[in-house]
Length: 235
Image (tube, rainbow, N blue to C red; front, side):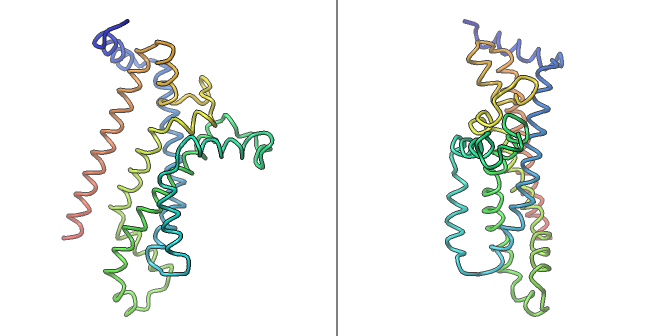
């Protein structure tokens, strides 16, 4: 059994040497995650802004649904997406199972409720502040949504980063629909699980170090953006 220090040194050596397999896995992880977050934001930001700015029948039920979906178990999402994309499923004809696209779909399902619910909270507070001004100027619905999203842009960037942090750490759903195929669908989290089970601790720990570094960078970015948003609000 290798001790931790020797494994850590070997892992850092892999990173420093620019191991091709290591960087291929990191690159695919970032492509899948960033694609999923962009799609989730395209869906979730307008949805959250609409329900945050307007009152309508069923709004309370939608609130409950979005909050519930924020806590969706990833393996359940993976199973549902698998059933949809499998050969006997309604989308099986597309042949997306065990591809990066299937992994993106699973991550979009997981991240979109988070983006929508957090956007709802941000825009609802902002709309309460702007409501009288909007009414006095006769601002239309689309313009109101656009104004809220623009003025909340710093806070919404933190929402997107929160979604990124959720997606990049995902393993349960992506391994079900992606299959962890070498050079095709192998990402950081699934590789860590696989290599640990095989006893290849150097590669697993190297990916763990990179994943942890990304998490720290994302959190630092969130804190920086929050500070910027606060300064902008009181400027």
